[in-house]
Amino acid sequence: MNALQQWDCCPEFIDIGDANGAIRLLKCDDLYAVRGTVSKHKLKDVKVRLTGDGISILRGTPSSQLSSDVELLPVYAVSKDSTPAVVTERIFLRLEEETTVESIRNDIEALDFHIDDIPAYAPHCAWLEPASGRVDEALSKLEMLRALPRVAHAEPQLLRARGWKGDT
Image (cartoon, rainbow, N blue to C red):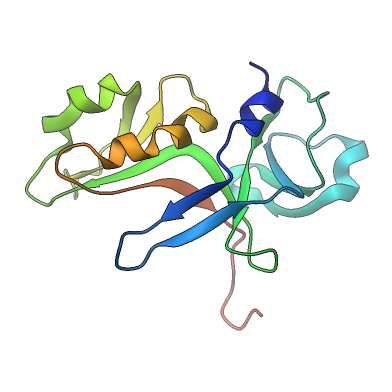
């Protein structure tokens, strides 16, 4: 499966939050993101750069002629006029406070995720990545992660352009 097919397989929406305050992010059909160097002929399409992450959000739809050194990522937003967010393959998992990530490692690995990082100050939280490294696979298994025992919260990493106080 090529990068464009993977991008096409990303869901049309993602629900973020919980029953007390969930929001729905919709996949932007007129924006896409790339991690890597943007080709010179695509520079005019750059809407915003997330410089610390090496990601650019571009207007339009991705070409089937992508360079092999560029990773294609989906862009989501609450509405057409809201700030777009790039979704990566990383998933943040938070368990009930008294449960450690290590105690459900086998359940996580059975879903073909590996534990990328467990913060020392929060042994009930972890950053996960799918073994395939594919964002579409991470998103397609989000509900399965949420259904694991003692999971309090699971959501994809969302990257947005930095906003400064006073920006409108």
